[in-house]
Amino acid sequence: MVARGVGGDAARRPLVGERLHGVARPAQLERPRLLQVLALEEQLGAGGAVERLVAQHRRAAHQALDTRGGGAHVGEGGQLGHDCRIVAQVVHPGVVAVSQPRMLVHLDGAVLPLEQARISPQDRGFLFADGLYEVGLAWRGRLLLWPEHERRMQAGLRAIRLPLDTAPLARAGEELLRANGLLAGFAVLYVQVTRGAAPRAHGFPEPAVPPTVYMTARPHRLHEEAFVEAGVSAARVPDPRWARCDVKSTALLANVLAQQQAHEAGAWEALFVRDGVTLEGSHTNLFVVRGGELWTYPPCNYVLEGVTRNVVLALARDLGIVVRDGVEALVDPAAADEVFLTGTTTEVLPVVRIDGRDVGLGAPGPLTRRLRAAYLARLDELAGR
Ligand SMILES: Cc1ncc(COP(=O)(O)O)c(C=O)c1O
Image: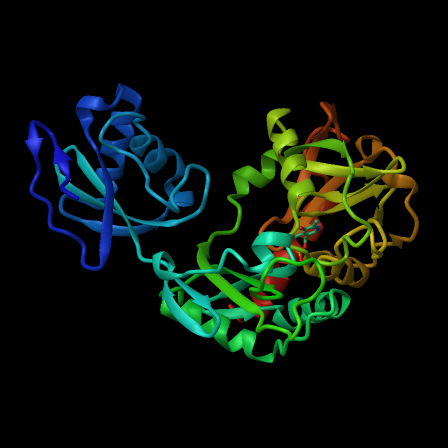
């Protein structure tokens, strides 16, 4: 692809092994965006090519690129709002070229470029969502809390009667992190296992077919403190999910619809309500603080037993915080003193508004702050940093 520049085609030195997705052309940029491009350039230096997470530059890079109908756009894998690695290069004063390094994925024992990964349309993950997934955090190429994720996956595999030796996954995952050059900072490993490809029939294939194992790895950054300080809002939605929410199934349609509904209501997360009790988020566990005591829904078939949830509960107990059994405080979480969410990529995140009502003072509370600090310290400890 040829980069277009100011007043004609700008000569562009291609970045080895990378595809150019677009260039930002000042002529097409409104003034605020142009200023952002210039700020980005200043940071990169003329001729400079610097790898960055879009998250880091979310405003500057995305807005500069998202000129809609102009020369610039972010291509596949670089949709707005997603963390992805980009290489921004100042081609020419006023022209920023952006490319995304090739993403390598793991598929059934092989590591290959995403574009070359092929899964059969007969895969039961595609046809029936007959599979499971895990999302784990890594630091400098090393998986954190993997035994906890693996134990949950093993329990899920037993529940769906899918025999798979999970022992090789950790090594394969770390190889994938290495292959993608994710040896600095945090990264997220996604692992999905399905019952394999076979002609469509509800019952298990006979004879059994090999499971499909798919993994991706992407760079990750912890939340900016300003984001955490502001807190997020949540919207409660009825829980239409099946009665095995303890299984981390790839059948996430209810979660997808709930999250979309929350987004459309201007909220960051949806909270599922069943029989008048708020259970958990679409991709997070829910904690409530009332009178200095901590409440979260007990592990059972109606919630996913989050790895982060369990770390936070252990930290709370170490800090002498009373953890209550029962669900009373989860009936009306907006009336609690504090509310927060936990999750592998969510960390410990304060909820300051539910259905438009302020939680407590409408700002992160003291216990949430303490537990977030303890959780980040635990991550540091696990990472050995
Ligand atoms: C429904 C649900 N609850 C809770 C969580 C948090 O789990 P973890 O802390 O293991 O990421 C997730 C994570 O994806 C989830 O999907």
